[in-house]
Every structure is written in C-alpha cells, then in structure tokens.
Image (cartoon, rainbow, N blue to C red; front, side, top):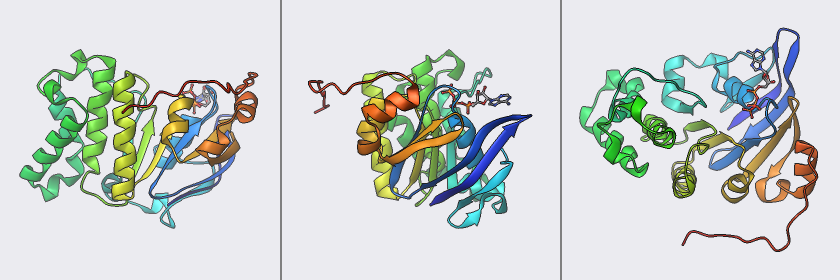
Length: 253
Ligand SMILES: Nc1ncnc2c1ncn2[C@@H]1O[C@H](COP(=O)(O)OP(=O)(O)OP(=O)(O)O)[C@@H](O)[C@H]1O
C-alpha cells in the first residue's frame, strides 16, 4: 500500500499540491483525474520519488519513500512517464530490454529474453522489435514503452506500477487490450496500479478507485463507479454535465 499524507509541493511561491492525502491499495487500479494543471503529474512524480515533497510524507508498505535505495525502488516499481523522448536509434527490443537493467547483476539472459519477448508480444509489438524506436508512430512507441515497464516488474509480486496517461496515443482496440492487461496483472500479481488519465470512460470502466484533483487539492475520491458522476464532473471541470439516461454502452466480446 502507498500512503500519501498531507503532501504539499511548491515551485517558487506557487503551491502546486496543497495538503494532499490519499491511499492506494494493492490489487486495485486507481486513477488520478482532473483538469489540465490540477497537479496530477506532479503528484505522481512525488509518489515515484522523482520530486521531493516540501511538506508531508509518502510511504510504501509503511516505510518512508526516502528510506528506500534507488536499487530497491527499481526492483519494486516501474514508471511510465508522459514524455520519454528518445532520438538515439535504439530498436524497440532494446528499449524493452532497458526494463531489465535493474537485474543486470543477477543476470539471467534466458529469463530476461523470455520476459522481453513476452511483453512485446502482449503489447502487440512483436513485429516492431527490430524497428528503430524513433521511427515508430506515437501509439507504437507508447506500446513499446509499456512493454518496457511491464518487463521491469514482470517477475515481481506486489510491485507498483505508475502510469502517466498510458492510453493517450492508443487506438480503441489497443486501449482495450492495455486496460485488460493492467487489470489482469493487477489482480494476478497483486500490483498497486496508479494511473494519471483524462479519459473518464476508461476510468469508469476499468479502474477501481478514483481521485479527482482540482487546483492542487483532492476534490473528491472513492469507488470509480460511484465518484465518476455528473455532479462531481460538473464541479471538477467547471462544466455543466448531465447524465445521459439513454447512452450506448459498447462492450468488446
Ligand atoms: N517546474 C515547474 N515550474 C513551474 N510550474 C510548474 C512546474 N511544474 C509544474 N508546474 C505547474 O503546476 C501545475 C500542475 O502541473 P501538472 O503537470 O502536475 O498538471 P496536470 O494535472 O498533470 O496537468 P495535465 O492534465 O495538463 O497534464 C501546472 O499549472 C504547471 O504549469
């Protein structure tokens, strides 16, 4: 479990996170939602340790984040950032192999290769493995990067998966496949999954818990099926929204 307790973060005099508290449980997929500039990515960066909080604390399994070594963290959690510009012509397969770097000293080439190939295949990116990464389309790059983070924690139980807009470049089918895979991995390996996202339909359908941020504070949180409602959305996005009683639900079969 991850506990975020009374976290504040400033840049200069601007308060970007204002006394944020949240808990993220193992075996659950949690969404961080809210308008542009609400502080979602900043909160995720504080949770991953790439930003140091000004006030408050973040703990993983009851231990403060700063007490973990980088090596420990790299074998416990994987992070998919929003922008990972790569201009060097690594192949897609080499990018995914980077997910196995934390285990370099315990090298088991056969296992690493199996994991890399399996995650490439699961992300429908096997056919891209020899392609130069910078030449891939936005969605293809996102799938390869997702294979990289999956490969990093593939053989770990109770690991942590932090994803900043993992489906933003994906078409409908790949969005569905990625969310199914996240849910399946989360349940089977008891992962703690935290996703920053904008797509409220995906959040409603595929996450367990949702936190709505607005102006750097938690506006509302709870079970996704309950908290993602017209009233909350109207308040958070400052846009009158009504519930469409005769909406159409498409289901993949
Ligand atoms: N280093 C920085 N210097 C100045 N302002 C910053 C810095 N980092 C973040 N901010 C500001 O803090 C606010 C929160 O940024 P953040 O990226 O966390 O928002 P977000 O909710 O993820 O937004 P989006 O949905 O647009 O990705 C924004 O107004 C942003 O401009």
